[in-house]
Image (cartoon, helix red, strand yellow):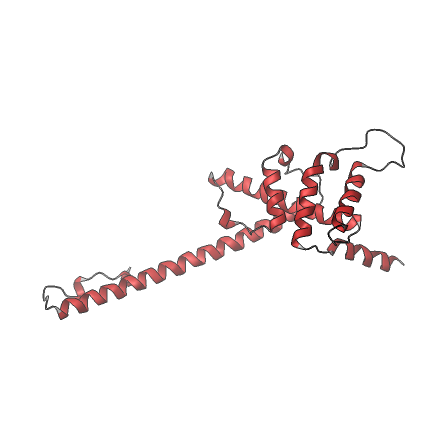
Length: 201
């Protein structure tokens, strides 16, 4: 019985969504974010929490576009989006404090839904206190993002290095062409040895 429950839990956590459904979910979250993060002030123990109310409403709206998901699947999806996006914002803030700026090329590209969430969180007060976070998986996401950033930086550095090599080789070829052209025109004062080559540096 426990194996069946675990299997079901894993399926719920890993259930994916179409790009349109994911984008709609983020829009619903933005619309209801204050209620979603609020607490139940009064009422009986049977009362639904504000978060449960939001999840059930989102479930109906997603179902209306053909995206059938449980409230737990919706919760896990939204939780993952929030963690990933807040981790991105925190990593950018850390880089900004070190370098004085943020190079977007150093970070993995966000999908459409998370880009929308990124814009919302970066322009609201919800991002304050993000380092502490309320999500237990936040620090793990930060580490994963930092690894991704390092990979992107290494790839960019490799591309720049290859570009410099190509530029040097191109410069050498142009110098050789200039030498040949000079010889063809009979310019005896121009010699191969007088033409500096970047390959010697």
